[in-house]
Figure 1 (tube, protein in one colour):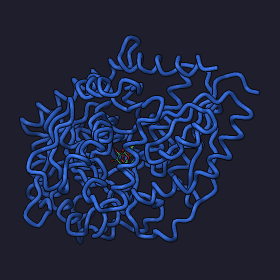
Figure 2 (cartoon, rainbow, N blue to C red):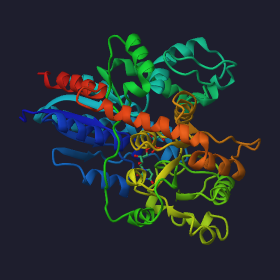
Figure 3 (cartoon, rainbow, N blue to C red):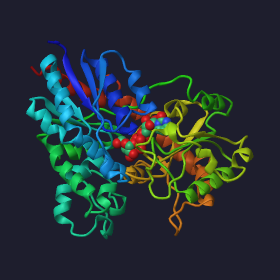
Figure 4 (cartoon, rainbow, N blue to C red):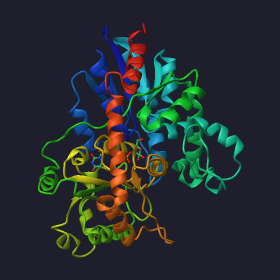
Length: 466
Ligand code: UPG
């Protein structure tokens, strides 16, 4: 039997969930001699991006793919529902893997993504301490924990509430900006989300990828509220370094030849998509702004804003074909378009990058903060509208373009906001605030920083377990 404490991690499908969890695993290894196994539910063969992340893991982090589950019966359903079902349908094989880890290692904790909340019961059944890794901020966690109360007290759809929702320690938030599953209370997805919100409290602790200097009021309010549930704000944990040094080198080479801080990076996370019309307006806005840009282009989708979320990006055949006629030729001195995927962490840390037009996924947000890069907030789905409100209204480190009556952000508005961010007075203020936030983030991970302390509390909890 292995003597070092062993931790099992259970991410859900999607790079935005896998990346922070494996980075968390690496951070744990810096602090203790843990042995770690990532247990990965699948619906088919893993994507190239996913394999690259896993293959680059140090030897004391193992990974096991669970046998693929079928989602044939829910083909075309929203990715959020598909992810939840992938997790629940993987429970029997998860139980097998955990049983064998319990028999052969000193398994002290199972850390699971909230999409896999039912695994909490499996952990308890096997006497393994369940923890949740919450990959976004304290406002979203607060919403989740307060949902049972909201569900009882609010009778209409949240989006029809006349007043914003006030969560303890958080900026007020309009119902229409709440996380996606709360936009239709009659949906199966809402019911699942509500169930998750009740089960979350049964975990032994919640690890959250944020830090006191960013989210202090919300974290303190949560700690007050959740006395018997330990909360560990150990962020920011972000993607580190290159996964594949060759891939994406074209865009890094291009960046090398651009002036310092001149380039706007445009990317909608691991699977965000625009409608065809919106993609055209964005192209128009980028071109007419005259600012330098590096744009990760995906094929448009008129139905879903996260159409590419569960897809293998390398299968998106020719997204550049959807750009307006002559766009690439006309902008060849001004910008670079990259199909599907770019090495975002390296792009954001490059000296030529000066702004980020982002869908406000939490990993992208933290990566931008860690490089002091101000944001143009363009939320698409999930909890991104909440993140955008936090970034623009609360922290004031982002600008948000306005949509017109057709719910499109038109080219003129896009160009205006780009210029404001990259060369305007507003942009200067926002950039300074973002630089201060970067300093605060670094402080959180310094030897006496809030996140360092929270991580030490968590690891001592685990190492002291029999
Ligand atoms: N990334 C790249 N290259 C690309 C696109 C993305 O390296 O071309 C990386 C990026 O650096 C980041 C991750 O992929 O590390 C994307 O994560 P994130 O910005 O959080 O976006 P999503 O993949 O959309 O993440 C999902 C949800 C988001 C949520 C997040 C964590 O969509 O709303 O905050 O998961 O729960």
